[in-house]
Length: 275
Image (cartoon, rainbow, N blue to C red; front, side, top):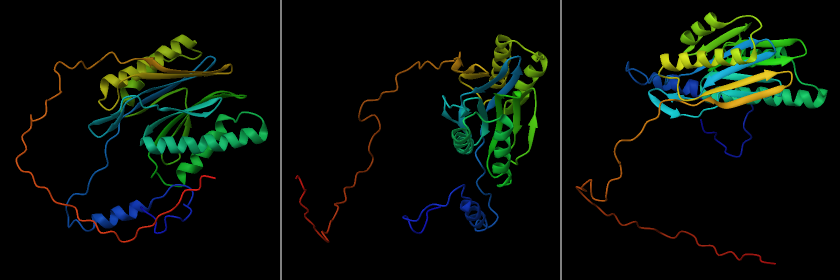
């Protein structure tokens, strides 16, 4: 919602003025159906393996039935040892992870060390619980710190759970079936990567909101290997016909030219200082 004074310093944090506006507009429809939120689609997953954590995500961003972006990055940088997968509203997940990353960067500059994963989770909990689920961010947080390898899930209401493997998004049921069948304690790196890839692929094949490429992020004590893309989509759309039409293909039925009348109210001439 536009502010009354464009020069006014914006209030920090999220703004939910449009929620009250939408309620007021809905009361004026006289019983008619209000517009529904657009459906989003995502498949994200994470697995704890022997030496670290593997995160994975598809790259399709949807706006209801429309594919808005085929190369959307859903694995977000938090700190050198922590990354986060986001499902839900793309703007909410990106802004939430950006705010978390900036807070942890300030902590690292002041302390001279990387943050712990539980610290990032607690900040996310406080941030999301404050807005009672109005931020559409379903997050999988994975990282490695001095206490070990960690994988957490944080939902829009701020609840948190530590798990050895997890999937979220509209394709999570198909992905979770692959994870439950293939997960073993102390997995090797290559098997963990293939397990996450297979889970994301299952979500893509079972959900129209998920698709295109597969991204993988491996987090260990030695560093981070962010592979984008890890697997390129095997389905390519080849156009059979040419869609270039010559001018005049669509006839013009009527044509009206309205002259534009301008009135000079004030004219000011300024000289440019070239000294």
